[in-house]
Image: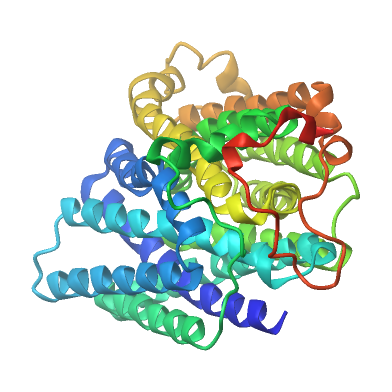
Length: 447
């Protein structure tokens, strides 16, 4: 646990710096262009590299030393931030520079994420996975609270240069913590002579033969498609009636919800049947997101954001813990990478849909005299941002419905009971397993 906590602390600092930069650059792009479509391109540049690179990155995370993968990723991200800092210093920053920075950072993150998540099961005992997942979510909640406030203050007092310096310093802390620990590798690795195709498809084969895990992967793909739309439109919705400071406040309150949820998960550990915690919390988050679009009221949005982000550690953390418990350590890098690639593939679709849906369809419906002004407009009001509010309502209800439908699948509902644990019950993490091709695991293993 000591090594894990050192690793966790370094990633916490690094993630905080990255979110400070992400928030500041998103606000800068929207203020420079005034376009939800331009903002959606930033999100697309963030996610598309994950879709294209995650699967080979996961294979490398299983084959290479996972600490080395994380070191190279953080060092590369620090270098890219330094380059953008130099561009900002000359006063020549353009929107396309932001696209390039976010795409490069995402590409490096595609290597780091599977390496980090698969390293966890080699550092902590099985009975701690749920609580450790709570800590992982806590490490995301802290930045969600701090980053908007720090970014807002830094933008006003030091401009983008100050924001980028904070990000650069955070990468140095992450590199120092990685250098201070060792991360064990599973002793059994994929045969060096395994074909590239089989190596890259191992994660898909592993999940495809376990229909409960496949059902959850399909649900989170739908979930991310709807969240992708919401994510892009969050900033335009709040800024349609409030200031940047209010936007930061709402995001910070949502971050407090995530912090509280992470603490609850860390202390409690979640339900024994993880799948009920995953889908139940996702359904609650969907209802909260629908409530976010009801009215242009800061207290309502803050409360809805708090509830939605309170639920996030449960569906996110318990899904992570379920994968770590049920998937063999030597193939976890590829499985986490596949999950990341498939789910992230849905996000760019949502990003691409968000701008045209808002600007070209839903917003005109809810202006004065619009087609829905005398129907839906009576309930959720009319004017700037109200079309986006309707999108939030429909997407949130879609998430809740998808969670309930997924729970009706018996293989998903029984996944905790039907799939054997891949980790031992000993107090030490199991990193020694029989050597065999991960693509040749017989179906009989499912029982």
